[in-house]
Length: 106
Ligand SMILES: [Zn+2]
Picture 1 (cartoon, rainbow, N blue to C red):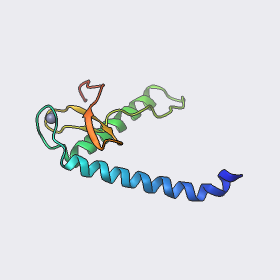
Picture 2 (picture 1 turned 180 degrees about the horizontal axis):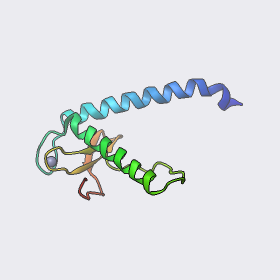
Picture 3 (picture 1 turned 135 degrees about the horizontal axis):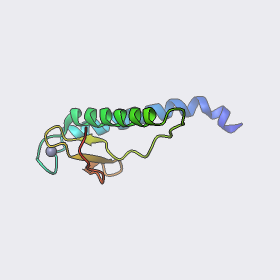
């Protein structure tokens, strides 16, 4: 019952937090240098990571028709547009770090 009452409140709050976190991540990327090549990551690195995540999910759905796929824990939030190094985002520390999965992007 409490959840039903709070539902209309929780959803907008969740979206608002998500919006501000996304904006903050992009702002940090605008001044974060790639630790491998020194290139500024910038918004394009976030877009590259989002595009790769989208491709990954599409491939999973295509290879597993009819199976419900739960979103896997995402580890890559930025990809250097120059050297293609993958970065994870450390929200609490507000910085990027080289991702554990650094297989080449397709
Ligand atoms: Zn780089």
